[in-house]
Amino acid sequence: RFLSTYNSLTDKHLAGYFNNARIRRHLQKSGLISRSGRIIPEKEYHLNAMRRDHQRYVQECLARAIFHKVLDMERHHQLEIKRNLEYSVRKERIQKIKTSLVLGLDPQRRKILFFQAEQFRASLEDVIPMHSPHPPLGPRSHNGLCPLVAGERAGRSQWRAPGLGADYGGGHSPYRYRTKESA
Image 1: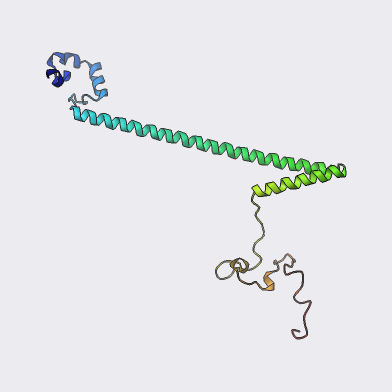
Image 2 (image 1 turned 90 degrees about the vertical axis):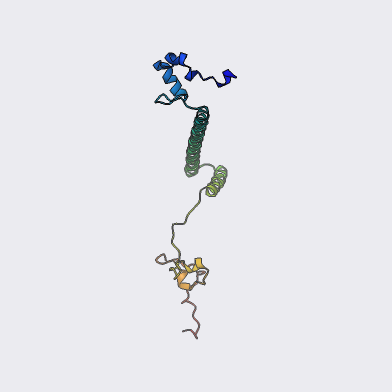
């Protein structure tokens, strides 16, 4: 019973031992005494120990999360480099095929290479999205969309691209075939 209640920090015979600077530093670091030299009660000591353990656990989790995020970013970067390299190799291969076709091979070989180049070009178009550089063929309506996009019926003037001289209305000029009633 006496040993269960015994606390060596309060033992007057060990006071000289615990006054040693090295021992006091160790006790402070362990959380058994405060900086002022006050003895920390057992409940408070266990609470502080659990708090330190939890803090250490959170820091380890954060470090692990940061590490995995950096790994993911590096993996993504490597994949991007690989994709760019593969794209460059494909482009170079197409250029070589085009060059060899221009140099004039025998007709049978030329057909095979042309077919392979077309297949390869088609596979690239599936991977790389193609965007048209041309604007819509008509003026924007009151809601900001071109009538063709908005689902409205377009007049003949909207079928012609302005300034291009191209007729998208089936190749017939609206003025060429006038009847007598409309003239």
